Image (cartoon, rainbow, N blue to C red; front, side, top):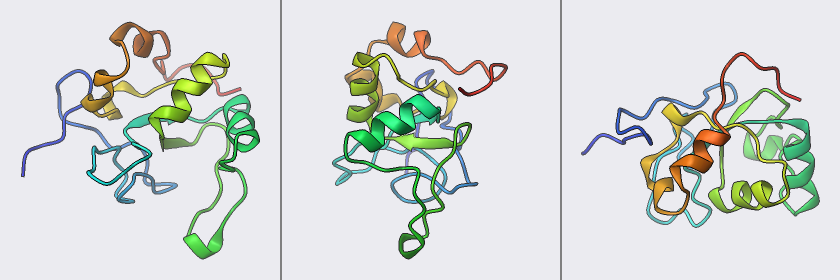
Length: 127
């Protein structure tokens, strides 16, 4: 099985295990056939993005114990649906992206400069 690569061409790093994320719930934002949402982009949640997502039909804030989902808070890392992230870019509320944990497949649809413009620097606090 080939190694998953990040947008830099290196090994894909885990996005989060607390909370556990990824389409496969293995902590990584992998490219998975059958994942219509394309959970390939590792984002650091912000209050504006969480509210935007809830207002647009995907409540990531409210815990859903029946799905073992704790609910997300600002600062949590999460494998974000590529389409939702692009919508958030248009709405000027896109969360920062952890490029080392973002799958190279996003480069098919997102220019590298756009990703770099939203790169998580690790030093700034979430809003």
